[in-house]
Image (cartoon, rainbow, N blue to C red; front, top):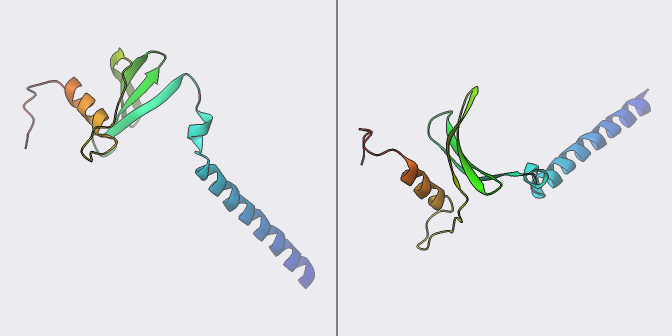
Length: 114
C-alpha cells in the first residue's frame, strides 16, 4: 500500500508541475493577447474610479471609446482611427491616450482642478 500511495503522490506532483509550467508558458507567450487577433483591438484604457474604466477599442478604421462599469458597458464616443505615438521627454506609454481622453472630456464641468 505504501508503494501505491507514493506512486499516486508522484503522479499528482507531476500533474501540478505540468499545470504550473503550462501557465508560465501561456503567460510568457502573451496569453490572451496572442489569441485576440480578431477585428477588435484594445488601444488603451484608464481607470476613472474604483471599478470604472474607460477603454479605447479599434474596430476596422475607427476607434470606439467605451465606458465599463460593473454590469454595464456603454459606447461613449466614436472617432476615426489615429496613430498614437509615444511623446518625447520621458512620459509614460499611456500619456498619448490620456491626452486624447483629456481632449474628448467636456469642458467646464465644475470639477475640482489642481
